[in-house]
Amino acid sequence: MLLLLGDIFGAFALAFIGLTAILMLLRKRILKYTKNLDLLRRSHIYVSTLGGLFLVLHVAYFVTYPMTTAVLLGYISATIAGVVWITGTAFLERFKDSLFYHGSLSLAAISMMVIHAASSSTNIPLLLVYVVLGLTTLFVLIKTMSHARKVFNELSPKAPRPVVRK
Image (cartoon, rainbow, N blue to C red; front, top):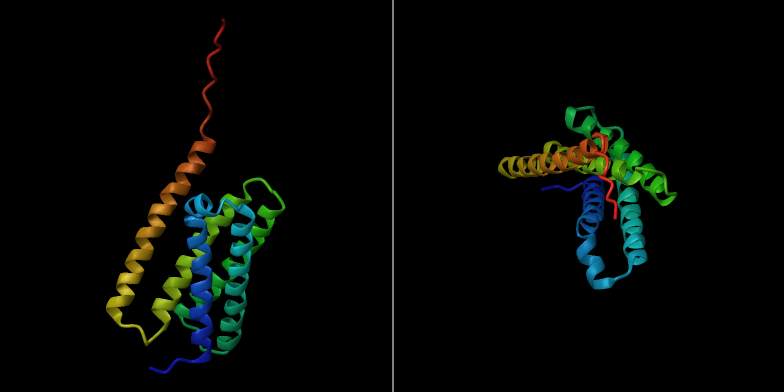
């Protein structure tokens, strides 16, 4: 099992980027114990910066490899990760709805990274690839339904509230 330096960079990138998602998924529980929103935000920024650094190193190492569907998927997910970074910056600048786009695009980028990692490596057993792809698909479908529900709730006309007179 030969691991190239680029594989190691990619594994670190996926681990750090996945950790940022876990931090955000568990933010309510983390805040219940730490009660420090600024610490959580800073941790998210630092961990995602490390993920971005290793992602850039991973792409730079493999940029001359032959183009396959798995490699193309990796490039697309890296591009989406760049857009995720921009929407995260937009959230810090308090732009309307940027957090929703940041979360939605993060879900797309991370799931594509997992699929890229599972499909482009010859070191991963095929059964494990199928399990990872199945779990990723299931998680993406659940989160997509959640995001779609938010969108449709925002788009539906709000019923006027009844006037209560005393």
